[in-house]
Image 1 (cartoon, one colour):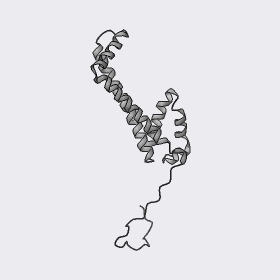
Image 2 (cartoon, rainbow, N blue to C red):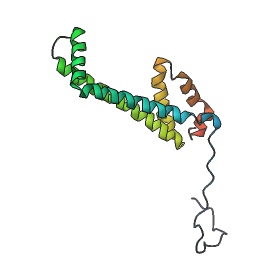
Image 3 (cartoon, rainbow, N blue to C red):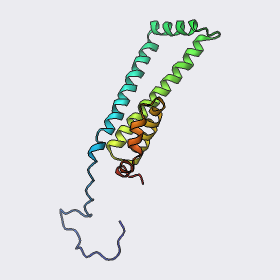
Image 4 (cartoon, one colour):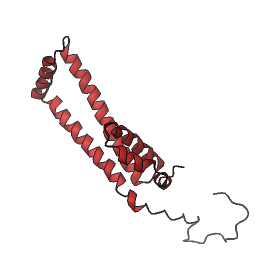
Length: 151
């Protein structure tokens, strides 16, 4: 904390606070209170998807079903390697989606700029299928940016 000169305040006594009290946190605008929960719901959605896919991959019948589906689609060559590559890609993408949603949730709840950035990335990704366009519009508004400390 920069000081412009000697303090006129006497030194703190026993049992008093040694520092100036922090300024009160501004209350979040009522229109933005729903925003973190939207991303929290998205994180839960992706975690459920990840769990269901993990159950299919873990079960022998599920793996056989995946192998049959790939074989019926006309893929020639090493089908097992293709399944391993597909499972790896799906786990990575779905896990990344869940992590981004969770990051946006916790960042928006704490009113941090990195939460706004994560939410913007997630909304931009969802806007590819038109669902994220309204959320993207809310995030880009100047009042929302100011609420999260983004100039």
